[in-house]
Image (cartoon, rainbow, N blue to C red; front, side, top):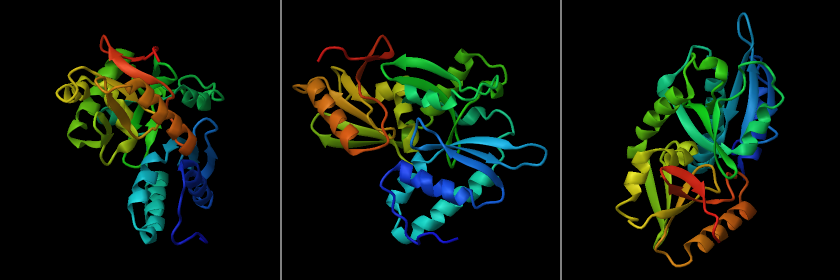
Length: 273
């Protein structure tokens, strides 16, 4: 295949275009199409004995890995991702230990509007502002939305409990980077695409409490990180809005334009400016 030996990708959309191009050259792939509502996602139909298999793929984690690799290793990493992707059988049943509840843009749901097949829509809950809680399978190579038909009759409350237990297991992998006094970025090291999900679990808030006894404001303009602002910081809300504006100007893989805080155990939009 005539691809660059050292591809460079400025954003998820550019990487997705490369992934789609390569998938279309594979005889096991029937169709690969971009999600119009999300630059990091694509739909893939692979040819299986007996029936085709439809996959929802997210390249966010792959992009993160490529940015940490030497240029001459990027091509092999993309190919490894594709090999796993087209060979993986996701029809093997509900994977309870991989279920997470992630935070995603509300417009993320628009990508499913065209599929009116009963039971094929994603499992989600409304959260606040411009984001929803989307139930996903956190596979090694991608995040896949959980179709209603594949939850085995479990209730939303049961799914939520399972998902939060799995997020709790990631707490030891949480990495904190201090930008300046009173402002930090938190990520799940090695699985950055699920970082916003930390905001849904009590264990993460318990982790913050010793450092921020007066509470925090939260910004999630990117899909791979949580920005935390100490409420004791002068003009904390204004600083948060300034950071969000800059991210929305400079970066493509966006999540939310709002500033949040936690009230009564729930993430809510900060209305005062």
